[in-house]
Image (cartoon, rainbow, N blue to C red; front, side, top):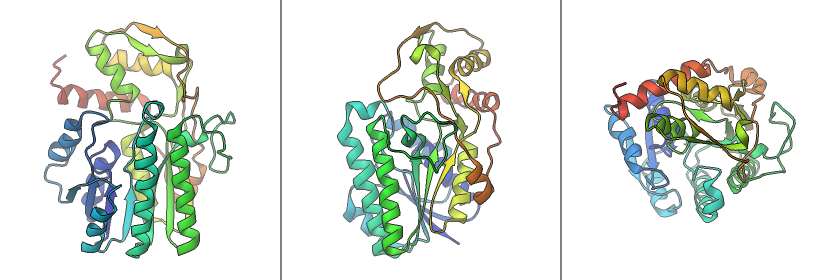
Length: 320
């Protein structure tokens, strides 16, 4: 039975990964600090409701606390680390840059050092499509240079990739970085567009639409992302970076229309200029993940949004 440490286990992706790993018979230990970047109640509900009855161990600690992490590593011999904990959010990195430096760089360094110390050879970690920054060539490929970040969040994710490469080179660790593209779905994050738009429409409020709506995102459903992570854990070898995206950019206008159709209500749009740190389009080249991981997304945007709205109405007890 593989023993896996999942960081950020109370998060959107982390909690879904724990459910999938335990379901396939893995032994899972997790850490999360339940910070207040968004409502910690949602994080606790993921553990107490979504993961109710799932057999795993949760430790409420911060990945920046080296000594507390060391105790966990000392108590259990892990076969792999799946590092998903991070300070998330491109826009928030403009307001609180030090939170990103601490969680995303120091936290990752702590885990790499502890993997080295305790001889955990397999390290799988979350990167982000944001590393492509100001690149204009699409679709974004893992072979593209990523030297033009437009947010500090992107800088920290690229730093994680570089640190992992160094630990692979120096200590022979197997390190796989996964560049996620706009993950959405049930139990998702309240700071993401789908959650923000849905909440506003149900409450009869207008929504802010940036770049006057001329945006495209490679929205990727949570179930497809989890499938990709598990494949990466199973095939972790050497040093690799993979895009995990839907490979089908969706125009923001259409994205909003699908939400409105499912809710049965129209919304007023506040058209605004592009926000600092944002990019007009993301699009994942997924040929490498197809070839090496045997991975391909299966969930279209219409199906994914419908599933999210079913969850949202149930969770927030909305009857219509």
